[in-house]
Amino acid sequence: MKSKQKKQSTNKNMIAPGHKACAGCGQMIAAKAVANALGEDVIIANATGCLEVTTTPYPQSSWRMPWIHSLFENASAISSGIRATLDYKIKHAKTKKEKQKLENIKVVAQGGDGATFDIGFGLISGMWERKENIIYICYNNEAYSNTGIQASGATPWGANTTTSPAGSGSSIDAIGSHQRKKDMLALALAHGLNYVAQTTAGHPQDIANKIKKAKQTKGPSYIQILSPCIPGWKIKSNQSIKVAKLAAKTGLYPVLEYENAKLTNVMKVEDNPLKVDEYLKIQGRFKHLFKNKRGRKQIKYIQSIADENIKKLEIGK
Amino acid sequence: MDINSKPGSTKNNKTGGWRTYKPKVDNGLCVGCGTCIQNCPEGAIQIKEDNNGNKKPKINYDYCKGCGLCAEQCPTKAIKMELEEK
Ligand SMILES: Cc1ncc(C[n+]2csc(CCOP(=O)(O)OP(=O)(O)O)c2C)c(N)n1
Ligand code: SF4
Ligand code: SF4
Ligand code: SF4
Ligand SMILES: [Mg+2]
Image 1: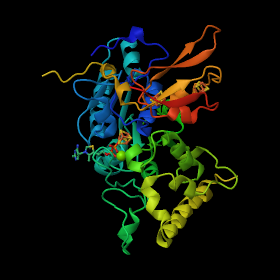
Image 2: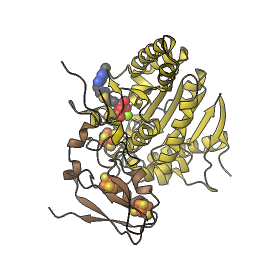
Image 3: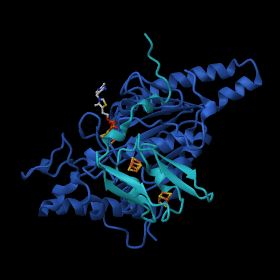
Image 4: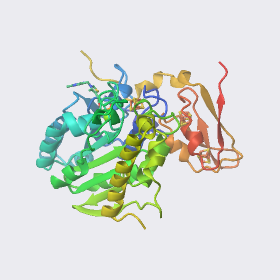
């Protein structure tokens, strides 16, 4: 696999066009920012999901760097193997130059929220336990988008998905998802990671900065990127960035980073932060919440989650 | 069995055919900030210098899917989406 490195110009993205992601896909905006910040000295292991499926319609690939896909659940384990091989090669390098070249190569594992929060979680935990020098990136579109928007451990309260359908009945099922999103950042911190960060597809420059920090971190790091999905969130193709920004502005999805277990950077919300209604009402997946009293009660509850974040992280002014 | 793919080979897929609305840049309004370039999920916008050395975006319609994000996010509203005649 030889890449035409000479032809690379500053205008060239590390993900080629012609991929099959939906028009306006938030995950692609995020992945493009990630790939460009990583550059070509990297080996990426990618779980299946929209990102893998849309960028590698066999025999083609959009990736302009070494990239491998094996299964849904094992991107982390594949990257552990790559890491072990690189470490062996570094140890046995014949020249200083060769050693340096190998040391420059970053190992990255990435996948969607289904791959990360649910099916791949055990293997990720193992990778973190072993303190392996691997960057893990989760593109969180809050559902299993690639297979038709089933709910995952990352699906938020009140969201209508195909496995948590909103209805008109009086049981709790009728509100859509009634599980609170799993706190993956807390789980990452509990594993003692030196770099844990959260950002959104609406902040591509912040994504690039966080990738650069993760590259400098020794040991495992975790970056979770909220990535609006056009059919999954039932938004228009020109809204993914706006929605992602609103998630941060309302306090529902704070943009932040932890270095050596300490919260070191967090984006403040404005005085009188925007209410979650502004975020929820433009997404079809929450449409049912605006239709009756019971739904409005859920909106109040979702607001309390945002308020809790703002208070806990001290991001109000 | 060859299970390797050529890096960047999806560029053979001309996804511009997906488009309903076509973004048009008004260079007079554009301030060359680059926001549209970062926000395009296709990587279909490049930066080029015009005759006066000012940076202006150039859209590659072979790949632009017409999502409208560039127009929506442009701080000076320099991009308009127009229904495409086919
Ligand atoms: C073991 C296994 N189970 C199920 C699938 C089918 N499958 C492929 S992609 C996918 C959903 C991926 O969801 P997520 O990780 O959130 O990524 P997204 O598509 O949302 O980006 C599923 C269920 C599979 N490939 N392998
Ligand atoms: S289904 Fe969602 S995540 Fe998948 S390509 Fe479309 S917009 Fe992107
Ligand atoms: S976002 Fe608007 S002003 Fe900025 S470079 Fe693009 S067209 Fe020009
Ligand atoms: S309409 Fe969408 S795909 Fe086309 S150039 Fe603008 S951002 Fe890119
Ligand atoms: Mg997902």
